[in-house]
Image (cartoon, rainbow, N blue to C red; front, side, top):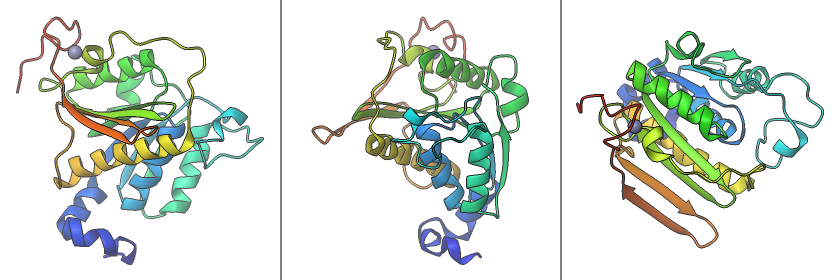
Length: 238
Ligand SMILES: [Zn+2]
């Protein structure tokens, strides 16, 4: 086994490392969360990554999206794929330089076993969650505003979907964002993916982790499905 995984083999064993190497993970969004999540997953040896993002880096991204540089004009998905190839050349990365929509979700994400929400707005998050519910795929969700963040795992038929969870959310033209908080929450989101793949630890299934780094307050609360949810209430509990 590759020496690059020596320290984590102590935790996962050869069997767990093979699960990481065989895993197919679709990450939607190559912004602040995506930068952290993808770097962590590639470093850990997650073998097959599909990434999607239609944007080009903007100067205002650079306080948290540390792989991009001023003046880059190519799509983030392509730049991210190059970065991940340099982080770990032993993994397979496919990039889609486009936004994931209801229409293309199956074509982009159909081959992935686990989906990861690294988006920055509620409508796009709900689209991915609805695709997860339709396809029965597990979705790891995270969100950050300023120094605050949250992480949960959506298992269709078992836990709330994002339509259940993200009902009334304040709309702001520009979301405040602190790079350190994005990295913190991105690390927690990546850890959920690794736990789901390897079976080590307790993923946040039916639980919401919240963090407020202004006061170092961390909580894990139980979350329940909305029995009236138009998206997931018809799915039978498994
Ligand atoms: Zn729901």
